[in-house]
Length: 467
Image (cartoon, rainbow, N blue to C red):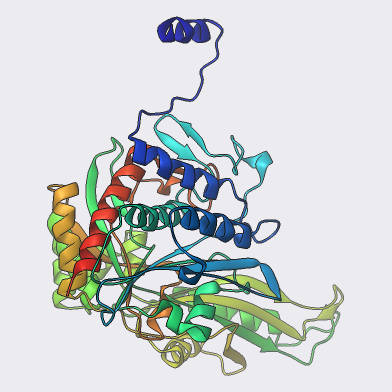
């Protein structure tokens, strides 16, 4: 009957999405994942609070009590809520392991997508939907892990804590991770936290090339570059001009290259990547590790945009404004410079380099927006890193693990700032095009998601059983 039905469908030109055969436990997980993806959590019209409430309901159905779960929000942002849930450990003195994931997603317009972004579609070996990869896959895995362990009556040495938060994707929105770190540190206090931020590499044929383990990330900071002038009538130009001064300063800033820096994480990353890459580029990586001032090696390695960003602080102009009337000389011209600062690089050091690069005393440069912490990367301790590597050898035999620093941003710094070392856990693999994260038709490999879930389930239990 199934073959007859398939033949009939093909004959009519209709091809239904193919859903892979899965284990019963994977089916339950898929239900959690589907509910999360199909709960709109965009800043404009969505609700993280609703998503958190739905996950709380699933946790309670598995046996968690009201005392085990904290649902939270603030009156000013009622839709940006989240939850913290705790699975007690057998040793009340042992510090917890925290599982952190964000519920909010980047905006997605239905008219631009090939499929409804808020309906989970399984097709051609991928799950499609906004947040299917960033970050509802991990949120679903972490929630599912607590559900499975509770149902199994697991007695792990350390407590496990789950924090599902909002605000990671939106500047200026209520950020649940920061709020928890500053207002309810006791809810999330842990030996260390597992977070997003790590991405393994899959080649064009789907083969695993390398696993990632994220320790540290660049710090987001905006600077306002401003030129002022008395202005006047446009029919009487003057030699000093705010727009020209700003433009010239921006050109010089754009030509400035911040110096190469290494942390323990990036030094290990480039050492291992050099072995995998080989050739001229691999040799240049090793030369640069030996001498960060080797300009020839820097030029070779930095041809790759990702490597270039991982090696230094980077700053780029993103917004420019100036003038007040078509027939008047500009009295003010400004630009926003967005910097991604190398972990541990100070804001004042970066600002001083921008001032030097601008080379115009009439142009001012100041921080703008929220000033974040400039912390060094958390250490790659044997408990955290070696354990992840050992468990990965079982799930991904022969695939090397590369410690790395993300050049983007996560909620990790909010926890690192209050003394909870936060790491991007391995297990996730990305296609060469990035799987459409933050873009159109975001997707997640079906097989890859189930592999990641199995790996993290084992890894989390090993962590929670550790001494």
